[in-house]
Image (cartoon, rainbow, N blue to C red; front, side, top):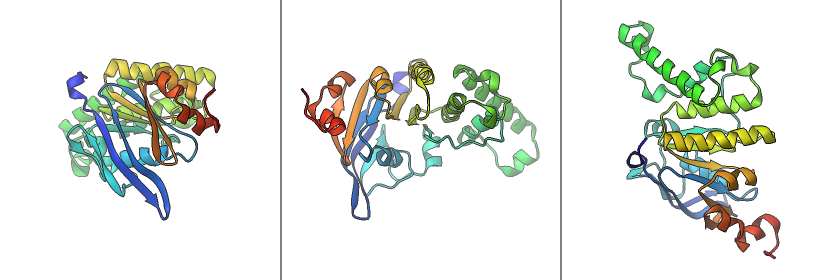
Length: 260
């Protein structure tokens, strides 16, 4: 995908409350086209709430989310998929009884033509389209190193492979923006290292933007182009990883102490 085809993501003054609790307080940041941007913060900082606003699960009280000139604020997840936003979840919401291929094909739903009747009648053009989407799904699986597992049930796979299936399903949307929610959660060190390489390859080979929420600071600081830090619902830092690591406010938020 060319750089011109990938729009920037702009989060502009997002505010979100749950009752009397302010989860987000005027949060703003920009994900540059083709970049790998991390959203981090201590527990309860608001990063998951912000992620859920961007991906259409929560509706913000105020503020806007824009992908290029298109406003995403308040749109449901299926609309976002049609606009080129793919999301992989912390707890992969996959059908464990279905094959890898069938799970990844679910991500192609927004790209398919025809309705229930035409698919049920097995019209020639629908058969051709099914084969085209299956081939593309298999290609995505090959790219993520799980091509040999396409006919295996997800429930029989090791945890690291299951996480890759979830990423494959998100990529099946053919996204311009990929949202990764705690992709390394539950992984051991070797699995995390392999995942870091995969995420970099997705960014480099596909040229898309990636926004990830992640607790593993080693992973974040090793692969992110830019990092936004939240604490108590407010943005406290935004910049390249080396600057964010040395920011006294970030050190205080994570460790409760000033920088030495």
